[in-house]
Amino acid sequence: MTDVQDFTFEANADAERLRRAFEAQGVVVIKNLVTKERLGEQRAAVNRLLAIKLQRLGHSPISDDIDENLNALVTLDQGHAMDIIRAVKDSPFFYGILADAKLHEICRACLNCETLLSIHDIAQFRIDPPNHDERNFEWHQDFQYNVMSMNSATVWYPLKRVAEEMGPLAVVPGSHRTIVPVEMNFQGHKPGSGLMHAVLRFEVDEREAERKAVVLCPIEEGDVVVFHSLMLHRSGANRSNRSRWTVNPRFGDAADPAFADRGWLAVRDRTQTAFAQYYPEYVKVSGS
Image 1 (cartoon, one colour):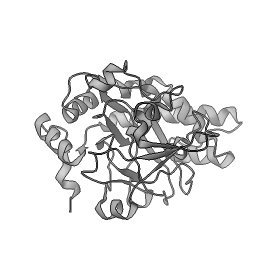
Image 2: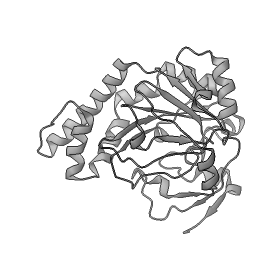
Image 3: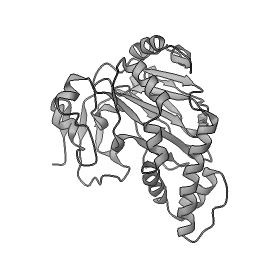
Image 4: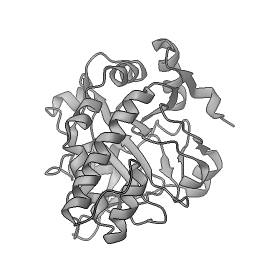
């Protein structure tokens, strides 16, 4: 049985060790990669947006804590969380995450490549409030949603510590070598709704995935997870009293032949059926 320590490294780990672990397991955990100061700046930027939204709704922000302000906001309407997510993704600090040199260095090491691409449309910022399960993902791969290079990577790190009761990230080490077929149904889907997960149904042996799964818990402030876009993974239900705040930029290898040959076309808001276009043998289309 694979243990999380088999692919956990300190921030100063050399590139070759990271590459070997990523190639074997499809996932690495880097401890203390993001400084506490930088995380504090990111939380403060989010909190300013929360304060603006609360003020526009006639309420004063109640705290310097993002969870307390978010709780006040979603008490008015759960849909306000999506407003914050959209605003965060259009904020300069989020673009700074996509341009973060430390993340680039780690991803180049893991993917064993020189030139990265990162597409804003598929870089994610997630807020998963307590007991709000509408956007929960079951076992899935990111590649079908992103369609960058075959050896692309998802970066996942929390703005605040993720404990066991918060539905931590679970991965299936070694599951990154094959594409899982999907059933695809875009009927009624609205881009930007936060419900893209409902479009694809993955043909996964869930019992086998659970048997082989490794739960990444706890993930402390500053820890960063990097996993292969073909890695089977999921997050659990959040049963705590605060939200799970996670940053999820994606990085791909610009030199991947299939990716480069199609002009680096990937999934964007206007090209969400790209997986079916380029990998039709793995797709069953329904609702058409």
